[in-house]
Amino acid sequence: MNDQRPKAYSYVRFSSPEQAKGDSFRRQQEAAIRYCEVEGLELVSTKDYQFLDSGRSAYTAKHLDDTGQLARFLSYVNDGTIPSGSFLIIESLDRLSREKVKDALPRFLDLLNKGIQIYTSADGKLYTQDYNELDLIISIVHMSRAHSESSIKGMRVSKAWKKKQADAREYKKPLGAACPYWIEYDNGVYKAIAERVETIEKIFYLAPAGYGQKAIAKILNKENIPVFGSATRNKSGKWGSSSTSKILSNRALLGEYQPTNLIDGIRLPSGEPILDFFPVVISESVFYAAQLARDERNIYKSTRQTKEFNVWQGVAKCAICGQSMHLVNKGKKPKGGKYLRCYGAAKGTCENKQVRLERSEKVFIEILAKVDSLSLVQDAQGKLKSELNVVNAKISEVSEKLSELSSQVLSFGTKLPGTLVAIIGKLEDQLDILKSEKNTLMTDLQREKVINKDEFFERLDMASYEGRARANSLIKNLSIRVNFDVGSRFNQSYVVVVDGVEEFSVDHDGDEFRFYSYNRKSLDLVESQGDGGIASIMSGAILDLIDIYKPVDVD
Image (tube, rainbow, N blue to C red; front, side, top):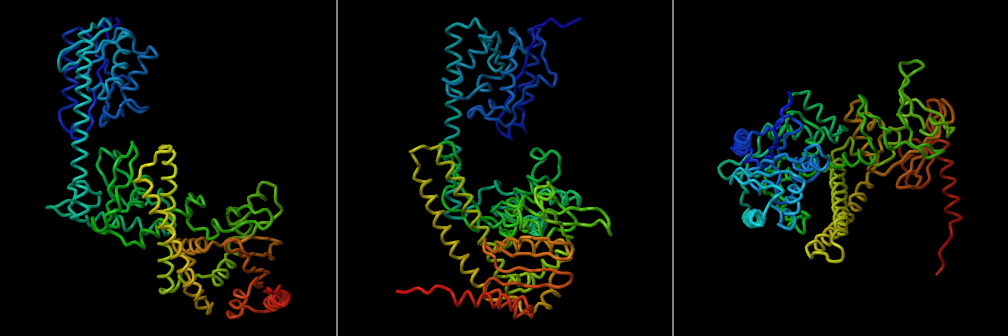
């Protein structure tokens, strides 16, 4: 026999984690059960009809967005899933809305006009579609009071938080327990949690070594390393790409605290970051090395993880059609193995041939010896390269901030806040300074080249995953592209292009290498390494002719 009693639905909302820990849910739910028992109503409590908004503000109407449970209840009323004559049980009208009366009242009346009866358990008031003027006045008073209380509370919280921010900036006074997950607040002092710092160091070692945020998460889970954060935020208790990504991009690791404020609904930085506010967990060079690696993965779309890092990834291009040379695995040797193949050739639109990966890698290390790659084997050059990594990553960071602010400018129309204009101007100045620093470092790096090639090859790590990833990263940071022209199985030509300019080419014929230089700088280096030969003589002769017939400026 079907239950013919009128159906009632309970909507429970609380906005803060503290309320979730407390008695709010039990209190609101028990009040709904009691009312249904007294009035002979059926409280629908199946999963599809449970409406709970935990941690959602009714003042900002977050409970009404697409993911809110009140929005789901309203949609059920609109499509007839919840029929006219049903009851909605709430603790008070402020659970339904804390918006301004002009926004809250129409929604409240719309529910009543559609036959939904609203019962507020706190004051035992039942609102129906037969409401009179007194009911309307009472509801408006409740809504006005709810909005006013939330507004005053919001102003008090905002004022108190701004005072904390001011004290943090002027006196480096801690904000209390509001701190990153790898830090604890102990007796008025912030302290780094040792075991979590070890995890962070591991994450920042893996990122520049070629591992993406998803691969890093898998490694941490495999090693059973506890995830940061509370169980309510991460119910699985496992690392994910979002959790590793947040750590990799968090400047609090450098000791910074960036105060923020809401300006016309948009959260913007409030002044400069406060330096040395939190304990410094990693160095600036380590932080930016990871940012650079992440940027490279985004630019070159490297998402697939392989046991051996492909040193040509994002570097190798087809000399005929310009498309990328992709790694393909044809199974076990002798007929199989790994090859580099033009994407166009794979689609039948290019005639370039494929080349064995191991054969092409012999050319790769020859190219390394002809470019600024000493940082792979020398500490002094490594320091310069590390500094360059930091500057490159800062340039990327500032450029991204400028891009974000530029998109926000559109939302303000012609009335730009002075704060926003000042921030944009400061970022543009920072960008100019960083570009100047980059040029200086690039000049310093140019002063040293690989001369003793045999010693360089002996110290070069092309065996480990990390070593191969570092070599690939260096080539990409030097803005190098290599164009493949695979004439036959034994004869290939590789043209090295730096910043869009052809520098030199390498012909690999059997086991022999021939180098053709396109400028004096690369010609001198080729000869200094003992790689002259007939190709070098030909390059020199051509360059001599160019010098002879070069036009002379006449005043």
